[in-house]
Image (cartoon, rainbow, N blue to C red; front, side, top):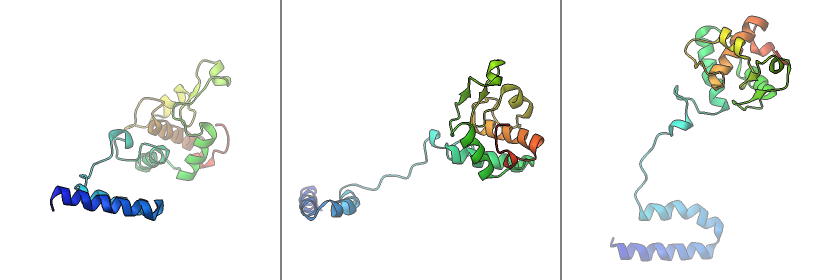
Length: 161
């Protein structure tokens, strides 16, 4: 089909859709694009959208990646137990820092998703994770390792620990 004929056809279709109303236009928009352009090539998610291990780079992905590492290392814990404690400790903010409690007064503030202090993070760091206390996966995994040693599992932690 010649470009001019295709353009006239698309213009008529757009006019008809405009008359039909917004609902029809929204449903038909993919058809308009398909008549005037080829499909976009499939792309992979940007690096910022996934972790190095391929999990979503968000709270859900960080917990799932931590659970996979914990399973390899026989560290107990469940998604719900980890999520519950993260929401209580940091509301899901991996850069959270507590500058007002007794730990902060001693110069060792609690940091990250599960509000771990540096000495605890260093003592319970899990091999294969980052040494950055603010790294979400490293923070979760070290905190769960600590909770397992102290309480049996992060699932048994129902308050500040």
